[in-house]
Image (cartoon, rainbow, N blue to C red; front, side, top):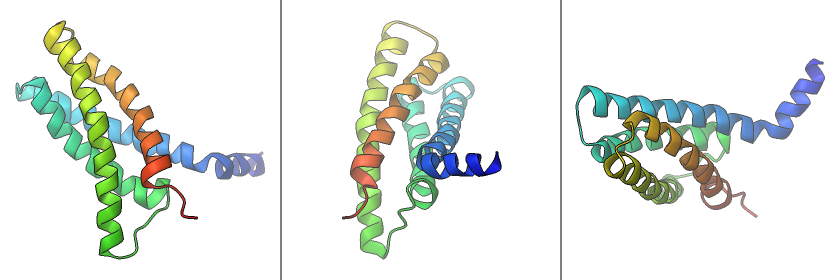
Length: 139
């Protein structure tokens, strides 16, 4: 049984780790958004920007170290990798901000609920960007 589990883990390690650390990044994102929005009474779009900075920084560190095992070699590679990662996340930030603008500011739906729903779209989009653009295997 244990051998089968380890075999499955090795086969799906990247996805398992991405879901685990992506889940933690989602907790960072939603938690900091809720704090800024509900407790600090910030505009939802500003609160989302702050939560994005915190969550993306956390995600970059965990993705490069553990998920995609893509530790950069040297400062130049680190800067290129980080720029690609944050650049890709800017695209999903724009998508998320549009979702929040439409459903919170436009339709008046509950902010934290909309944020949770938007995170599903963001999580899937971020995996695609990370896997095929930022941390793609070198040939």
